[in-house]
Length: 238
Image 1 (cartoon, rainbow, N blue to C red):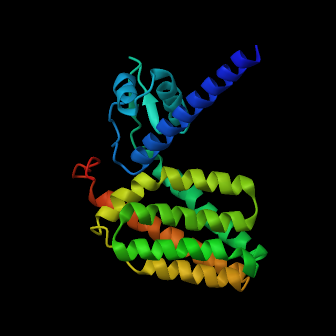
Image 2 (image 1 turned 135 degrees about the vertical axis):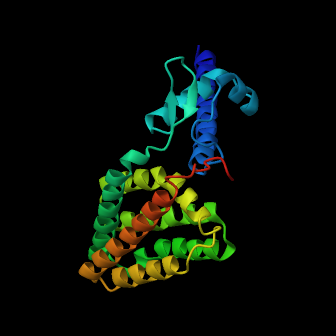
């Protein structure tokens, strides 16, 4: 009896690992735009691709659906969710607020031993900018701001901000293309200014810098999207 229970436990663990593996790969490809909006996600083909049964594939798709990254159509086909450009104004409002509240909170709780992770993420971001590696920029930028949120100490803010940053990765990928992935150095410098304000526990300045940082990013993305209203936006370019 114990042997049977052990086998069942191993099966559940293996299936869970398979689901996590499929989820992790597909989520990254969707957020990085390797899988563009509207792309079909067929269970049979994904099962063949990952070399596993359809059950963990289906469970991974359900998790992605819960995050709004994939959509199941009335005919039961699943596709990569479209980017809801109409919802961007409210998204940007929430994003700007979280930039401010987390950076402000970090300045209130700053201590020398807690700055190491933030500085490490900033080094990764600066290196990605120098290398013109857009996907690495997006990832490092996310981790930089999440590290600030973690220092602020409100787990609800951190979770919400992390999700907002993930939802915005596809927009950032489109945006970086307008620079030919040559991101202006000003973003690195602005991060440095925010770090300095946090370290000095200058709460109001940290708030002001975070607000300015968020608002100019939002404005530039909005300008980019406005310029492309009369031209199709290529969502499939690598």
